[in-house]
Length: 423
Image: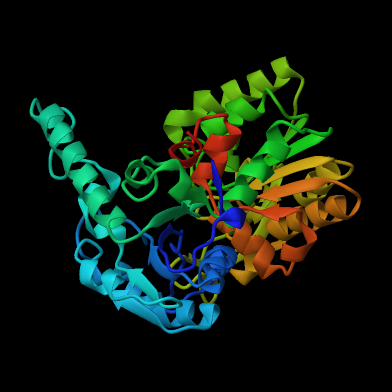
């Protein structure tokens, strides 16, 4: 397998798949540039060698259609500033041959959002899976995906995948494109190398106690990783919105809190599996609740109440929005003394400054354990935003840019974006 350190990009054009799916505010300004900063070492290596850069990424979920809300034109200035060179923009990623051909050494071209084309994800559009014609449509789309990948590959002499956040998808730009480069001209970027190593540290080099913290709103989106972790960890903290599904499963009153009524049995099953595996399961016992959170502005409405109460005794009209004081203490106690730590998902609506305490307690406990010798891996957009918001980014071992990719890697699944390079 080719190594980016040993490759000389002088006189070559490199097409680099990055993950610039960064969060934007209503004015189209980037609110967290972690992913852009993460790709800089790879991009700068190409330029320093005397190569030309073609950068490609997706943003959001435009579902195969052009949507100005997700245009990468919004981040051109930010990428130019970070790279220190002017970045050209190709408004159609599949029609950028002339712009790519004209690139000189040291120049940079950013392609428009790959997902404006359905071929990027390779899924048939506008046809239901139950439709008898679906399989034929799927075959046709796979053929189109190959052509789309071939077009992207034609722009460059070599290919670098530095987008760990999408490495779990067999998309045109993350896996299929690699077929059009020989083994000497395709490689993982620095960020991808670090991500793969960080996962290996958690899975293959576990130092105990191993504590995992899983947050977020839904049990359903995390059940695979939770079940897998129950066979690996010593302690598992479950927090965030999923708290209320567990509380409801035991007949608790949860007011207007988020809940998955069809996952109550799943929640009880997780508790049973933890017992069977000898894993200490830590759940929120109390919470901060409010009757006036404005999710649009992430602020508390004027005149609204904020109360503390048990997680299973939330009054009608109120919703749980953060872990309470007792839960925060329990989380910190569970993390104390850990030697391997994985955190994915916040403990509450941390975007609202009134409800950051639970996530902050977790972040600070992880930072303390890291200072005492633990290896800590933070993954998923919200968790990354947490550690950045609390100024803890330099106090943890590794911050992953990939959410779904990290979870699938932790589950032990083969990531197509990595396999396409490593063979």
